[in-house]
Every structure is written in structure tokens, then in C-alpha cells.
Length: 485
Image (cartoon, rainbow, N blue to C red; front, side, top):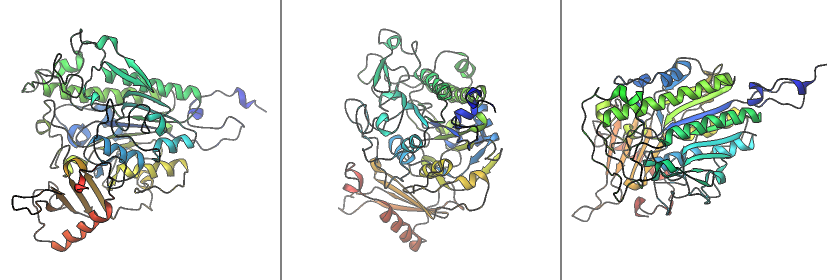
């Protein structure tokens, strides 16, 4: 009989195979979830981008499933990520806005939160997060370590993540000072944070394989969020001069908001935006190459998405690139352009290569999907598993309704079938002292661009979707601006 302890430890170990005996156990897949920051629906070649290319991300779509009706949690970073990690929609989840907490960080997830990191850890997975956190300061209840993350590297505070040449990052609870990004050095000539964070993300994959454990890696990159800046290399050189430009006058060294939320000046904003998305595409290619090098690609689920629609800050020009595709609106809107996002899922042997799905799904569906994949029968708060859709088998349960809210602009949206109602100006008062809020109704099948408000023609549908809004919003008094609560 062969000595099982002498068997070569390889991809099966990384996928979670047992070492205690010769009998094989079902392999548990690794998961790599890449979340872009403010990347629009139309910013990828596979979704129609024509002014620059994204070959590595397009290859993910060619090898997996591309979703056409995927929704973020909501329309800005922190609450959208809270929806993703907790499996709750934005009327239930803990974080309702980008509420900053001094001196560094955002309002924290509470002790009571159960995140997808906790789920994976309980199943024996190594967990890592590399990029922008924004869900609680270091040492708070929202610290990545308190929310099930074994290894974190990047920005704790999303406000400071506006700078790509920061003076520090965080390695778990250790502050890492980037000495070559001090103010005495011309801005843009030191360490580009996204490159450094990418290195750490690749190292984590190697460490998990060496440890012989399956892993869940979340890569919430800062790209392509403003500011617009990249290292001076062949990527930007290939784009500079290709587009007409409108230089952006921003916040530079010596000014009060430098590195604390302001965006640097940029002479070539369009070329730089294209170069940033191209750089992200290179990162995706590096991750895929690393998985293949280590022999674990075939047993790894790769997910690519964006946290909300395209931004307009820092000189960005989403209209020029048609970043929101056929949809109306941008980041901070509850029109489709602010919440409908690219979603690509690759899983060799499970997800049919080159498949497309118009199944309507959301960020809060990922928690129950992961739970079904790893065999965790714990009910999820608001979502439903999309594993049947991924595997092309019957039995997919569908959402009857969807609900979104954005506390900082006092806005709500609900969808039932093709009907979508948007509630704007909640709590506002007109000159006559009466409420100045308004409702807009759209049929997404007939009017995907949300240009024809038909609320006056269909009062019964408006009434039904209003009821969904009322039932879906559970007050969170930590964010008192919403509803005037």
C-alpha cells in the first residue's frame, strides 16, 4: 500500500483535499473575487467598449458566464460593499452611506455582522482582502480582522484611497509607511499603490497553496476610481495623444486636501482613464496566470464585478467612453447606470464557457451562492443562490422584487418584473411648505434608458411599488439623514 503522506501536495491540497487518508474527498473550490471601483457597464470590451481593450477580462467572459442584469448593492462604495459582504439589501444592511469616522475610516460594521469571510473561515478556508476596505477603522468592530479576514493589505479608509501615491497603507493592523511617497518627492514618482496591492494579492494565493488550504480572496481594487493617475510606462504611453483632452485642474502637493480626499491635476484625463482600466485588465491576467502556474485554475471560481456605476470626478468623462452603456445615470444615481454593473463568473467544468445570462441578480445573492457551493445550509438574509444559473440546471429561484436606497441623497428604487419606480427628494419641502419629493416610473423592457416617466399613466403600479419601498426599508438610526429619521 502506498504511503499517502508521501503523495505530492499540489492543486488538490489547495482545493481542500484531505491528508488524513487515501480516500479522496470532494474538492472545494477556491474563490477569487475581483471588485473594480466605479467601473461602468460599458468600460469592458465584452460589454461593448470600443475605445480601449480589456483582453484578459474579456477572456474571463469567454471562458465563463457574462450577466446582463446584475445589480450592485447600491450606487456608492461603502453601502454597496456592505450589501455584498452581509447578503442584505440596502434597506436592511448595516452601512447605508459613505459616513466617515475620524481619524481614518468609515462607519464600522458591527460585532453582530456575519460576512462571507466568516462563512468561508468556518469551512476551513484562508481568507484575504486586498485593496480598499471602507467598512470600519483599524481596531474597530469593522476592522477586516474582526469581520473574518485573515490577511488584509491596502487602504482602510476609502477617502484616503483617492490617492494612488499614499503616504501609508495597512498590513492587517500594522501601518506601512511608504517612504518613497513623501511630499518631498514629486507626486507620481514613488510607489503606485495598486501595483503594490496586486503584488500582495498574488503572494496570498501562493501562501494559501503552500498552506494546503482552500482560499477566498477578495480584491476590491481602487481602479478606476478617481484620481486619474498611472505610472509613466508603456501603458499610458500607448494612449497619450489618442484622444482629445480636457485637462483637469485638481488638488496638488501643498494644497489642504492633498492626499486626504482630493484628486490630482491631470493633463490627459481620458488617456489616463483608459490606461487605468488597461492596468486593471493586466492585473486580472496576472491573477489567472498565477492560478494556472500553481495548478489550481481548474478548481477556482473567478468573479469580476464593479461596486457601482461610473464616476464623474477627477476629470473622468464617462460620456466620452460611453461608460454606462445603454443605461441612464452614473454613480450616486438609482437609475440603471448607477446600479447595473458588469458581472462575470468563470468556473471551469461548472460554468459553460461563453455563456450569457439575463437572469436578474444582485450583490446580496452571492452569500447564499457561496454557501450552497461549500455546503453551508445556513439561510441567507435577503439573497438567493444563483448556482443553478451558473451550472445551467433547472430549479433557479427568481426575485419577485428588488429594492435599493441611497441615504445620502434621500432616494429609493424598487423593481418588480420590468417595472421600476424611483423615489427622489425624500424629506424635501417646497416653497409652499408641502413635500417636494417625487416618483418616476419606467418600464425597463420598453424603455431601458429610463427616458419616459409613465407614473401618471399607471397609478396602480406606482402604488404597488411604493408598498415594496415601505416594506423594504428598515430604519437605521445611525444614518439619520435618510427619511429625516
